[in-house]
Each structure stands twice: as C-alpha cells, then as structure tokens.
Image (cartoon, rainbow, N blue to C red):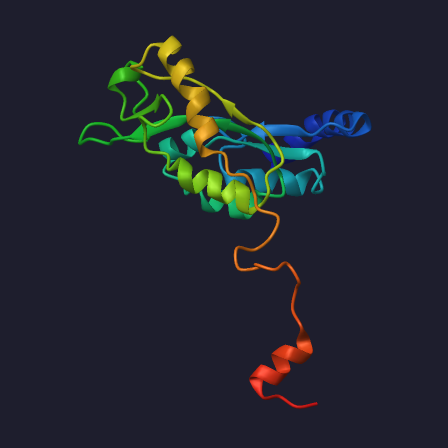
Length: 194
C-alpha cells in the first residue's frame, strides 16, 4: 500500500501535466515493472483516483511470458487501452526453467520474443477483440526476436499486421435492407395484439 501510495504521489503531477496538454499517458504493463499485470494496474489506478490519463499500452507478448490471458485482458481494460504493440512471443517451460528463466541467453530461454507469426500469440483473436471494441489507435510493430534477422522481421511484420487489421462494419450482416425494425409488423408475425 505504501509503495503504490508513493507511486501515485510521483505520477499524479505528470498525469496532470498530460491532462492539461490533452495527451494520454500509456503504461506498458510489463513483467518486472511496478505495473506488471491488471491487478497492479488497478491498485495504481485507485491511488491516482482513476485519473483519466492513466491509460495502457497493450502488448500481448508480455502476457504470453507471464502466462496471463491476453485476450480477456482486452475485455477488462479496453476503455483504457490507447496504444498497442504488435509483438509475438512463445513460452516453452522445461523441467529446468519456466517463467523466471532469465539467466540464459534469449535463444535458450523458456520465454522469448519472436517475429510476428512465429510465436504463440493468437493475433486473429487479438485483432477481433480490438475490432469488437472499435480500438481507435495504431497497431505498431515492435520487433524483438531471439532467432530471426531484424530485416526479415521488419519486412514480414508490416504485411502481417495489414492482413490482420479488421475493418469494422457499419451495419449488421443480416440488415439487408437497412430499414431497421417495424414493431407493428413484428407484433403481427408474433401474433401479439395491441
């Protein structure tokens, strides 16, 4: 409690300055940071009195490495997500290392970042969920891969993102005529009088 109180004391002037400038401050929830998951973010948010500029940068790769449900995270925090890193990761625990296996080089870790499509993030689900909430921001490629050359990762990353972006429809798929509903007609079909 004292730690989050101190965080709020330090961050509130910054958040207020951002608010005065009309800019959202996006925290990248990340293992090893003060705000490492949804629970720690909520503790912080309570201490800054739900400050409207205390927003989030969403990055599913960090949640793969933490074994956190990165899709339902969007359900919980979609109103606060204002920035998005599209980055892949994989988590392959062994009998010798797991979530905290950070003493190996990146290629030999149980949890490591990968190029888009080479890891375990289900980007179809991520982009569908972001489209569901009509996410207004950018899908920004953040490339860190333990194996692939960076030029190949960059060359493949932009088309990968473009293929996954979902253009949100303006009307329901079954709204053929676009006329809306006719309550009197519906009542007649249902046999409801009055």
